[in-house]
Length: 91
Image (cartoon, rainbow, N blue to C red):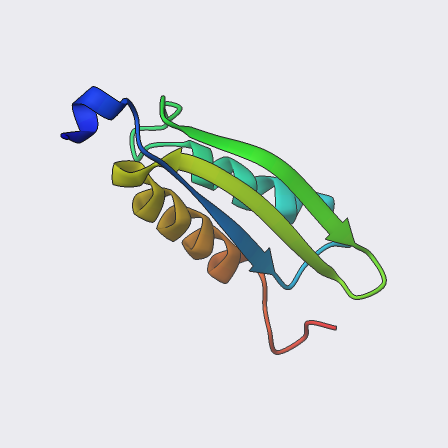
């Protein structure tokens, strides 16, 4: 069977980042997962949940997407996290 007969194939990623206390950074990482390079929202990508633990200063962002789009979405979110979180000073 081809994937077109089965419908859209989905995958999920639990992206862990070392930030929870600065909510805007967590939100920006989640937004980066949702947007294409041109700034438009990916039609086949959703952020299902964001869990932040203030005490440990860690967050988990649950991203669901088509198999074809998940890798690009995760890469965009990781790049945003890398640019926004300075691990030299991170608690």
